[in-house]
Length: 75
Image: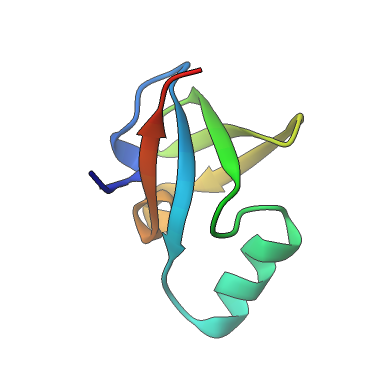
């Protein structure tokens, strides 16, 4: 089941299935490590979402997380 990244709670892991939006936005996220097939962990949900991406912390604003569709996974 695919859900927007902003639907996950703190501590949950997910695999990125799709990133939508302007090509420059999708490309920028790919440069930061958020692309199809990568795993991310939500460290802090909310308007300023804090993620663990490949051992690095990444902060996304507001509606940006809703453009990232993920499949929740359990480790």
